[in-house]
Image (spheres, rainbow, N blue to C red):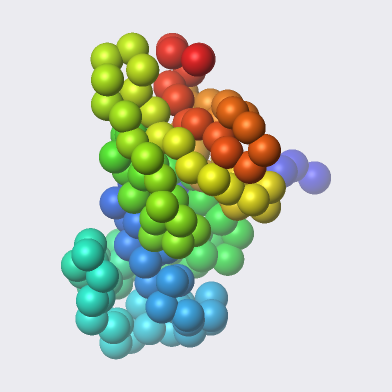
Length: 144
């Protein structure tokens, strides 16, 4: 038996999916609403247009289904995208730094949240523990 690789989503599609999940819908409800196109209006600071998920599902329904039910990996992360993902998916504040040679995102995460983030991060990023519960997500090329 081979282990099936996770599906890969764009950073924006991952944020849309997590934004929809944050509305409190179950996986089955998310799939149903995406299929029917009866998606909620986003009132967050992000102003997500969840119809994009319906369009993605129309192109590749299996991709969306697997992302929701089995998890996903983001194709390419940016510092801003990681910061947004932590805010949307985990509901936690994060501190962002864009200084050359010292860019990254710092957040206080529980172990389960850290593992969840680690599971979706694109290649080229590393989570570094700073202190109890606090970590910094940095590009591998930086490794500070």
